[in-house]
Image: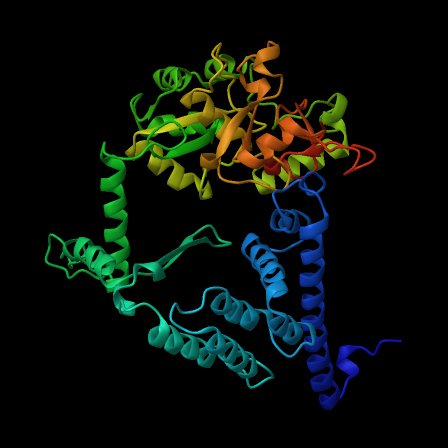
Length: 474
């Protein structure tokens, strides 16, 4: 019988915590070994992904970066048994192993082979045991690179340049960069005139911190870039903001601007011209009138709606509650890269910016923008992005900018280019659908569903698209 933690003595607490930590390291080593075997033995069709990293992310709680790191370790350690031995015996963490492996795979250019082996052995020794410190290991690697690397000084070496952009759990974006001196000079020169304190009209000093002024300046530079015409093309058009909003919120947003505030959608402009009759707007966009009192008045004497079909059942209520909590792709505001926005920020964008509005019904399904052409138009891509958010294949979700429009019923067989015959897929999953037994269809919820081959699931149970994970019915 396992002793409860609160019953352990102080010595037992310390011993158990140390033992569990060691077991975790051994289990991590085991996972790396399993992934290495999966990488060499399991087919991509069976995985449903280009490699084990995507499969790990979709089937476990691992983040994409963590899964990618595990796969890199699995592949890299096969060439360096000494690093693998240290990890497998639990005397070195996988973080230190990744650091040493990166050095071993790309050693300094002028370091001879004998020196590489000796340096790797020294790094492994420094990373072994509880006294190992990441700072010491990095410092040793830096000295080796400076001594035996290229003749270009580290400050001028553009090969070291890195920029990380990580979306946080609370919907913000954290940037971390490492640039050579010239690139750094360009950035600081661009920021400098925009970071000066600006007193208020009454002479009050600028209360913003230097970091806040730099952040505001960086945002201003992005505004200027996106407003310029000299920009590259991505996904068939120049980069700009796309705000996805629900029909009911579109009617709420009308009062803060005119018809020019929301552009590029004829129905949206028609909505802005009719600020007083929201029921007619609902009729135009959804084809169904809305009883504005339906949610406040009971349908029977008991004070509860009788409903029909799924609407009167607990399952439908659960799905409705799930959508209310998680948004289900129909949040008040939603950006393809950064995700949901608050009501106030959505209103600000709708009032202050020229943007593209994708109008959604109450189930998060965009308007049908059918076309007779084979090529998916820019307007259709925006509608597909509003529905699928990115690659729709279960567990993938690559950004919409990296996807292609796939015809479920092939164009050559008479399939139309409209919303109920299109799905966004990344390059790999587009090829997978075309060249394997995976199937895709649009369910009664107007969203894509995927059917795995029998080799993956003998029962071939349909799986919801990536953006539709949750209690939905096909």
